[in-house]
Image 1 (cartoon, one colour):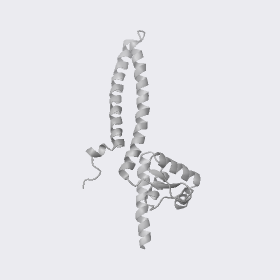
Image 2 (cartoon, rainbow, N blue to C red; image 1 turned 90 degrees about the vertical axis):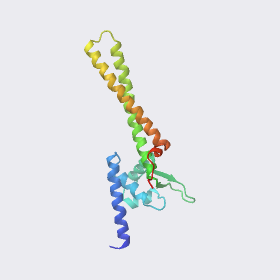
Image 3 (cartoon, rainbow, N blue to C red; image 1 turned 180 degrees about the vertical axis):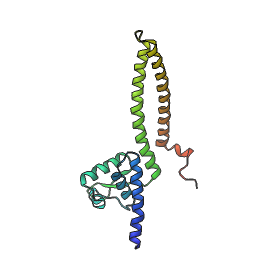
Image 4 (tube, rainbow, N blue to C red; image 1 turned 135 degrees about the vertical axis):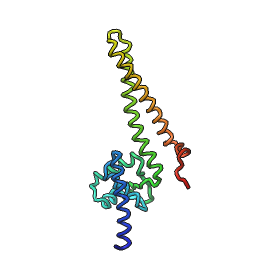
Length: 178
């Protein structure tokens, strides 16, 4: 095996691991492969260049790139004299992690808190209704306690997300232990 083949094998191993890892978090393996391939590029690529590199259709490539841009894992870059859009992987893995998880966590927090707050309101209405029997009211009180506790967790999670977005988390867990 020559040096070029060894280099490609080493890169492919990492790209494969990245794609499998991202799949664990709800990102398709093909999108993970695209990020991995872009990560090893020394200069930004156009959609056509990425299509050729990975053998994906242009539509699939465009959708994958858009997903990576939305996750802030890939950014659009400008280069003098190039008319097509160029894309480059975010090289800072700390930032990539923070952006990826804050996007996912914020979505989850919003969905769950909205449902819980609506249910809390409805449960409180049950408690205030004189026509509801005592057994139902007792269960509603227990549910209110559970939901109140869960909402406290989501408020904590929002603070954690805030600490990732501001970089404050790195004061408590430094990026490097050197």
